[in-house]
Length: 348
Image 1 (cartoon, helix red, strand yellow):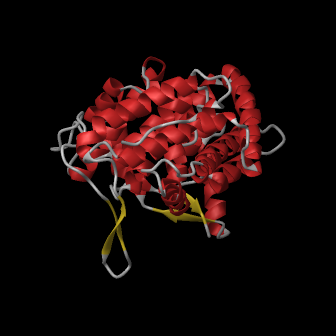
Image 2: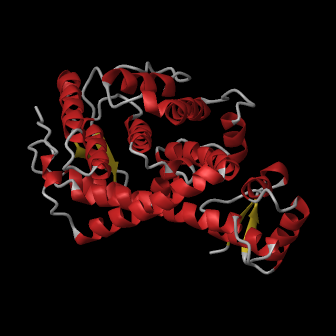
């Protein structure tokens, strides 16, 4: 059975690039904490937008897709799920809400992990809240349609004990003041993904656990700029880092650093985007129209007029409409969708 030891994080021998990322995150985290105390309304609106993007992004990574209109209706609980994909999306919505609202009372422990899984699959015919009953494989499909085994996770018979050992190793490491807690988080997430304890939903649960541990350690940028959507936008590099760090995992000689670097770089991007978004919202030396333009151009996803109104509450809908019309006319922004589903995205 795989043994877990995170003491290598004590050495301080970190890649230079990783040291720079951690330093940048610490600086932006402090700035965000100060702003949040004095700008609760703005952060609440940013959270509302990020929640939709998180639910969409985390499911889209797994090929679970529906329209933006339906995503919004499901997230806002204005409609019941109409098919399998929407059932999966509704389940993630509920599990994400538990993490957002109750992270202080949750932990990386078996009962909380199983409960999140049960809630996430509560609209699905698959029984959630229990570890896998049979062995599973992580498959890769080539461009010609052929399949190969990319990774063989922990066997079903060893899963319960292996999860227990991982959880205990994490609890031991987080009490060690010589270990940077931010660097510890992706190590546990990598191990969770390599164990692959569930028959279905491992990737989505790993992202919920990532948020849980980040929030518990004070890194909450992913609540306001979707952490899951950043993974979705850069999933090729995410999967490559996961592949490299999982090599030789079973014999305990794998390197965690590629996955740590990818994880922390994703978090840094969230903090940078939050800093940029906040600067736009509170810009005093630019016109309202310019702030609308910057909001659209900096948006990671197509953004609607209503979402812009949330981000810029002091800008009138008329001004927003005029700015959007000008951007479309000048070919800077493309309009996608129609009627209530209309959104705007930067032209490539």
